[in-house]
Every structure is written in structure tokens, then in C-alpha cells.
Length: 510
Ligand code: HEM
Image 1: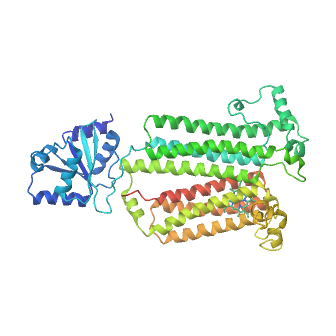
Image 2: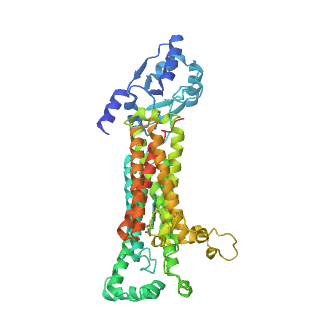
Image 3: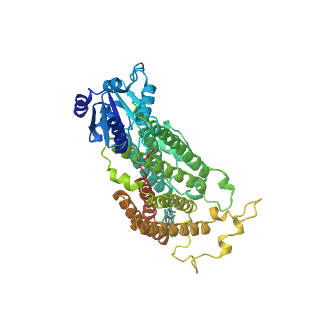
């Protein structure tokens, strides 16, 4: 038991009941007691923080976050003064006490009761009619370590996205032609094993069509890149699953956080499977019989693989930030003036705008993945023009060449035609830049908490950098360094947008 817990126990153990409520509720109770001339000893304790923290830590109760007052009422005195003679003891029946309190104090809603055996202390949370009453559903608060762990795994996902991009840019992704989740951890140990792996690679279209002049040392390089990518994926799996099971078993997570963690674990597994599904598309023998086919993975699967990595990253980031903020709220270190600012209805439209912006960043990133998957950054290497105009000719954008059998409309151009895909990415990127600039201008007119203000400023800076990197990547014809920085930029942009969304989130109130 920590020293503060001991102090708490020593100070408050003589009281058998604690009532937690907001100021106006407390006022109405005192008023009723005074009017009825009952002599119940009531101590009003401030700050509520101490009790909040202690109850949360010691009794596993999440209580009224904004309860600014705590009254301690001696239950024996309460029962002898106002309980009817034959009434069951309030210790025996929570519902009778609940009814009694509702009747005696004219409460609009029934109080809820929470008991703990450990300290023989009960907390009664009274729902106040005041909109400021913030009694939260009871739940085991999630420990901050869970938040730090989620943010660390998000950082690992950030890293693997960059490594995955480098694997693609160095054309290494198809070098390991098998999927062996366990034995695949081992690198070839002898020269003979390396040769064996090389021979397997030689059976596939990328070697036959593109790399037929490759020697063993070149092969080792691309193999090592892909191997590192896959190993990193396994490291993330272990770094996520083992602590998740441990934290779950030790009761470190609330039910809500637990559900989210299970969802993220599912997404992680799906991400691995999707990775192999993507690689398989680049190993298909059909590529050999298709004239002019380029041995590369399906751009749809590449975009799906990148998209699910972004979702995984976003989920870990938002959940981690939420856990850390909730921990601050429960231990009383969260600045309540921030939550007041966030409750202001003036922020509602801005909040929706920020969420829409984060979605737009995601969509633009997915269109970028299609550009990367089709190598569409190797055409029209100029900006803002594409050829003679800002927009390429209509018949090139909506070419009938991309209409598939049985289809009549040229919509496939938006996904399969490198010219259209690049054009879309430009339009979406410029829209994203414009929208973020508008968001920033809008933010100047609002009273924002400092974190949200910082996030929106960073967002504006990052989008400027990202657009510059995108244009440079295009003009210089996709050099590895710039393309990789542009990819890192997209995830940084998403991070800033999600940070803003998080910083604008209201503290849940009921
Ligand atoms: C402003 C927001 C932007 C976002 C969020 C964004 C996002 C992305 C993403 C996620 C990729 C895929 C990277 C990969 O998988 O390796 C990409 C690729 C690309 N983007 Fe952007 N982009 C933006 C702006 C731009 C601009 C303004 C241009 C140039 C006009 C541009 C040109 C490119 C090119 C050429 C690629 C392909 C690079 C490659 O093959 O690796 N981007 N973008």
C-alpha cells in the first residue's frame, strides 16, 4: 500500500459512507437536512481529488470526475435520525437506502451504490440534474502503462510502414517466395541454403522477366530487406500480444479498452495475412503469359495492406492517448478548465471538421498508395502541369482501354489508369492542403485548449511539408529517399490529424 493510500485510510476509515456529488446537489441535500432540523454530522471534504484518487486506486471505482465536494456522512447517525423504525439496515439493502435517499432528498434520479469490501467503505454516486454532473459508469480504470504500451506499439507500426515502403522501393518485396510464420524467422545459414533460396526465387516471374541478370549477392540484399520487414512484423505481434494477455490477466484494462485491444489484435493478424495475400499476387504465374505485364504486386492489395496498417496505427494511437488522458482524469491531475472549454458547443462544428479532415488525409494516402502501386509517379514528372495543361486530355483520363469485359463505364480508370490515378492524387492532395489551411484559419477564431491549438498548428506545418515532399518526389522521378520521406510524411500527417481529433474529444459526461 502506498503512503498516500495509508494516509487516506487513516483519515477516512471511521466514516462508513461517502456521498459524492456536485456542488448544487450537495447544496440541496444540506438544505433539506437543515429544513428538517436533522442533526446528521456531515463533513464536506475538499479537494475531491484525494478521495477520487484513493477510491479509484484502492477500491477500483471510477467516480464522478467533476464532483467538487465530497460529503462524509456517518451512516449510523443517518439511520438513527431519518430511517423509519422497522426499516432494514442500509448496510443490508442498498435499494432501501437508495429509495430512502430519493424520498428524503427529493432526488430526481435514484442514486447508484457502489460497495467495496476492502475498506468497508461505500460510495454513493448521486446523479445530479445539473448538466455538469459527470458521474461515470463504474469501471476498472485502465492503468497508464497500458497507454504507454499502446503508443510504443504504434511507434513500431510507424517503423514497419517505413520499412515496408523501402522494401517496395528497393523492389525487394517478392524475394522470399514462401510464407512460413515460424521457421521463416531463420535466415539461410550456409552458402548452400542461400543458393537454395535463390533457386526458389528464380522460379518466379520477377526473376524471369526483370532480374534474370541478378547474382547471389544482389539476391541476398533484397532477401534481407524483405526478411527484416517480416521479422519486424513478428516483433510487433509479440510486443502486442504478450503484454495484452498479461495486462488483461492482471486486470489492468477496463472492459472498453480490453475490447479495443482485442479488435487491434485481430487487425494485426489480418494485416499479416493481407501482407502475404499481397505478395502472392506478385508471384502469380499468369504474369508470364500476359504481354507487357510488370512483375509487381496488385496495387489494390498494396493499398489495402497500407490502409490496414494506417488503421492499426491510428487505433493504437487513439486508444493509447485516450487511456493516458483517462488516467489523468481519474487521478485528478487533468486540468478541469480544459474539459470546460471542450464542453463549449462552439467547438462542435470544428470538432466535426477535424474528424472529416482526418478521414480526408486517410483517403488521400490511399490514393497515394495506388500511385505507388502502379508506379504512376514515373509519368508526368512536372507540377502543377500534366503535359500542356493542369489536367491531362479527357480521353487519356477516361481511356476506353481500361474498360473491362462486361462493363460499359470507364470508372476503372480511377483505379487502374496511372494517369488518372496520379491526377486524382494531385487533386486530393491539393484539397487536403486547402482543407487543412481552412481548418487552421477557422481555429484562429476559437478558444481552443492548448493541446488542440498545438495540434492544429503542427497539422498545418506538416501538410505544407508533405505537399512539398510529394511534388519533389514527382519532379525527381521517385528517388528512394524522397519517396520514403513522403511516405513517412503521410503517417506524420495522419498522426497530427488524429492528435487534433483526440485533443478535441470531450470528457465523457452523463
Ligand atoms: C498532401 C497530402 C499528401 C498525402 C497524404 C500523400 C500521401 C501519399 C502516400 C501515402 C503515398 C504512398 C507511399 C507509399 O506507399 O510508398 C504517396 C505516394 C505518392 N505521392 Fe503523395 N501525398 C500527398 C501529396 C502529394 C503531392 C502534392 C504529390 C505531387 C503532386 C504527391 C505525389 C506522390 C507520388 C509521385 C507518389 C508515389 C511515390 C512512390 O512511388 O513511392 N503526393 N502519397
